[in-house]
Image 1 (spheres, rainbow, N blue to C red):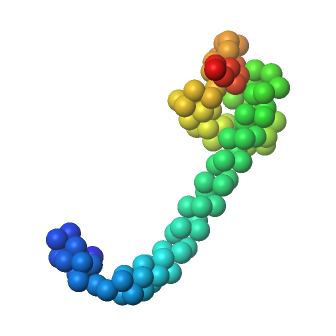
Image 2 (image 1 turned 90 degrees about the vertical axis):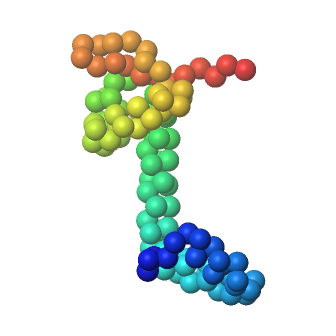
Length: 110
């Protein structure tokens, strides 16, 4: 940021008028539009994967390779998604089959 400290930035922002602040924010949004759009698309894609995985697990408990094959996704990506869903309590381990755990949707308690 051109060697500016947080304090000098705060002083500059404080000295700005309301219209100058609006214009500065508009300019910043334009500069970061591509980054914001890319992040938004990644989140949408991730949410679609989560929904598809949860749909698969709603039918019957499945292993990561079974989910990956059914959705035509990479097993590593499915494992990351299943791990995230497990972390937040949406998926639980059902049983172990060979080297793989079967996962199912967590039951919702009232």
